[in-house]
Length: 368
Image 1: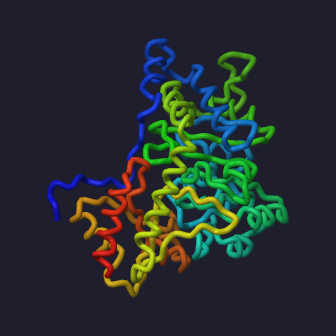
Image 2: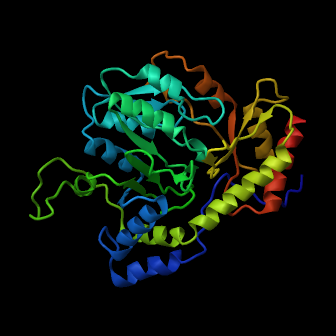
């Protein structure tokens, strides 16, 4: 191994556009808190991109999900169906409301929420479904929405990982009653921390009010309900406006990186590569692979091998139903297998083609 080779991280932001100029404008103007032109611009730009009327910017993706549930009246005694193969925040926000998360199985091709298991999990207490567009591939929204319509349930898309992904030509975040996005530092676009609710729903005014301590829009410091300080800052939104100017470029680069990985890793023994269903546009937030149980090395051994080659990687999420706050002994074998076998390879839009070739070469080296 050439010890002069640079370290390849699994993710890193690209901030080479107007980010510094817009943030400097905030600092120079003094508008650095939650009031300022960039908040409105970011909300409008992102809503237009998703194809909805309203964007409500929040402090992070978790608060976006929580606000959506609160606005819909989810609370104690209610159940919300969520995938187990997701980041824990998807389940935590349900608990924040006093409701109970009900964990459903993953389907094995796209790794998203399995609608067949969702239908089995509906009870008289079920109020909502939160499909997560895992690693950038959209969930089967028509089937999920049909189940929701049959049982009068709300659908909130957790699109934290899927900016710009498409389901049958529609961008995610515009397919359920509401969508929730994250702009954490490793996402396709970033504001450092930040989130967004996307919706056409009449509840938009209520969501905005809840985001700001439920303060009355007509009577200052009058609070009609318990609200939250879930506002984004103008500085964060300035980053978001600059990132939105390049979002299509970033998505195109994500897809080009995935295409090159697919070409280089195709046929590698023991590997399952990510799919893109005919009805979907996968944005490959993470280029993710499965290391089969019959492969020459295990997933963890492959990660250790990559580390010796100065290549970062990360495992799939632990199924939430196996984590201490939620462990009940439930068995979801597909989600558990995906978690055991799954690995996210370096996926930043800053990757060069040579970086991708180096990663792929190291993967093949371990498995062939």
